[in-house]
Image 1 (spheres, rainbow, N blue to C red):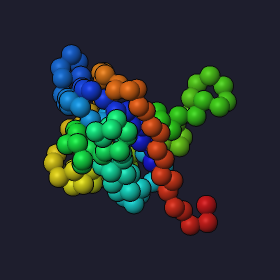
Image 2: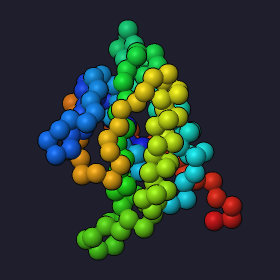
Image 3: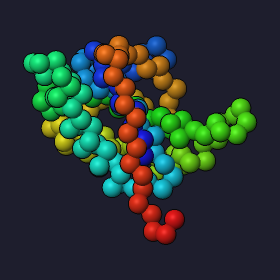
Length: 153
């Protein structure tokens, strides 16, 4: 599972010109689900995002988490994070989970993050064509991957 975390001053998701979710200061989290992922990866990455210290403390150092600064999180599914453009010019998405598995684990991640933060987490709409707008703060962008533990693979 991959999360692409962006520290934002604000972010929102629009679908067909309508805003479906928005946040102020916090994190925009784009999530890609691998074909081998399980709930274990979703829970580990949700906790990592809640505790990730990318917000400035009083000394200006990145030393505070969403929990410490009461920041918000917005989660958007993005299967293209597992796109492979290594061969040819058209990416392959064979490493991305099929839609039913991807949606289930995406929702599990959101639920785990909501529990960790102690409040609901707004989201985009799984599988929809979305316009994601953000004001990247810093900019700070981190790619975090938690590989599925597989038996003998």
